[in-house]
Length: 387
Image (cartoon, rainbow, N blue to C red; front, side, top):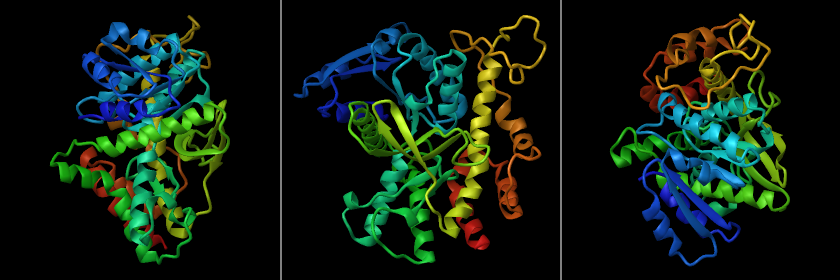
C-alpha cells in the first residue's frame, strides 16, 4: 500500500476542498468510485495513463506529488517527477505544488529548476513535505513529557531524512526542561522513525504509508487554509530559502508562514543549542549534495543551449537551455556516485570543523541503505563529542 490511497481518503473528508482528481499510471477508476461514495461534498474524479495526465492537472489549484517507484531512490523517482513537472508547466503553471516523493531534498530542486527553465517558477508556490518528521517529533516528545501530542509542536529544520533533519527540541512549543542525555535520546528516537517502521514491517524498502499520508494531508490542508485567506498558518516545509537560512544552501526545511500568495514568510532557523548547532553543521553537506545532483541532472537532460553558437557546458552558460518535453528514454545520471566526493571536497564548498569532515568522509562511500540506517547514530556521536 502506498500513500496515495489513504491520502485521498483523508482529503475527501476535508470540507475546504471542492474536488480531488486522482491520477496514476495504473487504473484509478475503482478507487475513485469507492471514494465518491464517502458522504462529503468534495467531488472525486479519476484519471489513469500518461495520456490523461494533462486532463488530471487541468484547472488544479494545488498539485500533490506522492509518486514513487518500487523503492524511494533518486534514480527511480527522478524520471517520474520530471514527467509530471513538465506537464504542470504546460497545464497549470500557477498551481501550488507539494512534493512528497522521496528524496524530497533533491526532488524539490528538480521541480524548481525545470519550472525556472520553462519560465514558470514561483518559489512561493513550491514546497517539499517534511511534516512526517514534525509529526514524529511531536509524538516522541509528548510521550516523554506525558502530555497530549496536540499540545506539542517541535520544529524540524534541514531536510527530510535522518542524515539531514535537525529536530529543534529547544524551540518546541511546550514548556519543558530536559537534560543533555534526554535530548540525545529523544532526538535519536525521532531520527530512527523510518528505520523502526521498516523493521516492524519486515522490509528494508517499506515506507510509513499511513503516518506519511496523514502528514501530507495536514500539509495540504494548511496550504489550502493559507490560499483561502486564513492568517498566520505556520508549516514546516522544505522550500527555496534563497540561501538565507544556511550558507550556500538554496533549499532548506524550516517553518514558513502560508497565505493567499503561497509562502509569505520564511521564519528561518530558530535559536539552537550547542547540540543542535552540531547536528545542523553535520546535515548541511548532505542537503547541498542532494541539491547539486538534482540541478546537475536537469542540465544533463538539456539537449542544447538556446544560443546556437554557444560552446560552454549548459551548467555554465548564462542562456537557459532547452528542456525536452519528455524525459530521455535512457535515463542516466553520472553525478551521484563518481562526482559526489569531488563535489563535497570542492574548495570553499563548506566550512565545517574537521570532526564533521571526517564523519562525512567515512560514511559517504557506504551503500545508501546502510547510510540511511546508521547515520543518525554517527550524527549523535559526533555532536556529543563536539560539545
